[in-house]
Length: 154
Image (cartoon, rainbow, N blue to C red):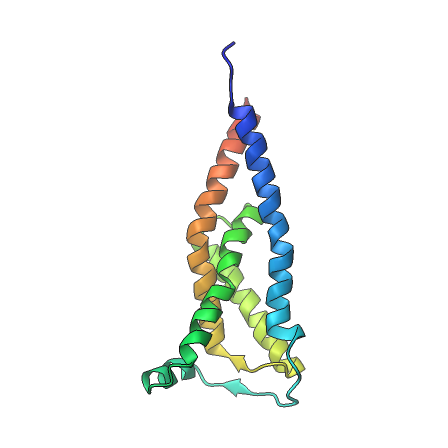
């Protein structure tokens, strides 16, 4: 029987998968800290109208560009981690739905706790970020899991 190096590769993939899954813990805490834990309550329940950030950006308020980019980047890692943690989260559409649910949950929590505003713009940008991240996470998960399952069948 010829030497087969796939066993070593599978071990490396499993270690990588474990490390990536472990990264979800500090990532989840960071999102929670940024969006809720380290914010002071304002004692006002405010809902911003849709696309107010884009409107202000067009009017010349360039400081909002950072918020838009930050909100897009915030759930980008979710798009990478979700397919690695949940095998059924294997398509960008599914990841976008997960991003939407996470983002709406954050916005509702901010509204209820008064630790931020309920912003539809944030939901849009967070969901976009998760969707874009899925274009890295889905192929990566497919590569890891496909070769993994083909090895089990032997």
